[in-house]
Image (tube, rainbow, N blue to C red):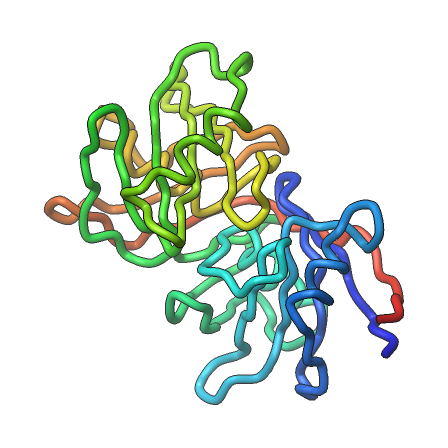
Length: 256
């Protein structure tokens, strides 16, 4: 089988993207893992299919780099909105469904504004917070984040018994002046640090709001800059938006 694919990236979080509007593409876990393999395949943090869904502009189907179906990916969602615009599926606004439910998005001044799910509450742990922003996230504030061994520290938390078999993503956050954060993330499914994690920076921003950070929070990741805007509602948050660039890197063909 010959596949036409597109490569997208959002602040260094990169994806293999497939147009499945005719619904002819069916991939096994092994095939997805091969396509995401950085030595033997195309190379990516995950793979997405854009396909039709009644009542929506499109459906986002997302797989982690290990080939397993995954929960919501924020940067992936932003990239798929940009891809939908490229395909003329949408113009400057989109309404789509993903693993965690419906999402609104719009494109303005070269940035994709993606509405994330509402968050009902932030759970306080002994040394961190835990919340679900479409995917589960453990958020820990640290100092000197640039020098932290994110792979080792994140992997240790990812497999803690309290997170059971599904595990969790792990975010380390350094609070900076002027309403800014520096965030590094160990992502489950990739099983490594990524250059950026959209649901992760969203979790970091919402957690930081309880320490006085105001919307929008500006966030530095290894792959660039993002913003998260939100409204507080009781102990939770609504109208949460992940804002940042999404770029098509190249188009190609590959045989499976």
